[in-house]
Image (cartoon, rainbow, N blue to C red; front, side):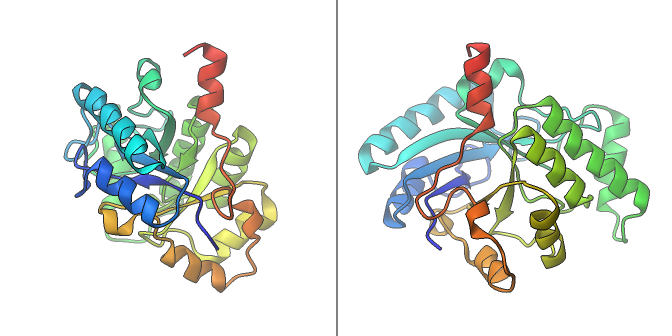
Length: 256
């Protein structure tokens, strides 16, 4: 399975070790057609990108694209902030980005104190999550997909357990991809196969690279898919295919 593009890589603008140019060079070496820079969203208290740095990030992306011949897209890995599906990417930010990823992270400034307790405290407890936690987490993901033009949910269920099938159904309805993250295992074999059997959701494989050496890495995902009779035609960034991003379509409709 040949990866066409990797849309989840980080740089020193948030939590990555290598520059945009170094990631782009690595992407070229791996034979990728497109590279996505998706630094952590603004509300991440430890590693969030700052709005004042966006112009520099975009400039570095343009230079790297010209230098290495790989299309370099500037996106964001936005943060979930609350049950209502709010994220830290405002519509006024949309013109600055090419794509919109979103996922759950710790150390995020949530929308309310109640959200802080429900999202961070209850999901950080070292115990099996109860049904109410899973139900709330599922609703948070679904509301985010419904209320924002999110291109892909990153590392679904990682540290934020949910009903992955229900989230996948919603993602399929709204044209949002489910990421298969090759940095961390986040879906069980059973969940992944049930998602393909019971929903029409489509997938992306991303490295979640925090260093250039991991750009284009797909090992963990390949190992999981090798155990399964997984329909790889449901993955839209392999074998020469490129995804249709919901975010770009939204921006066109809104004139952004």
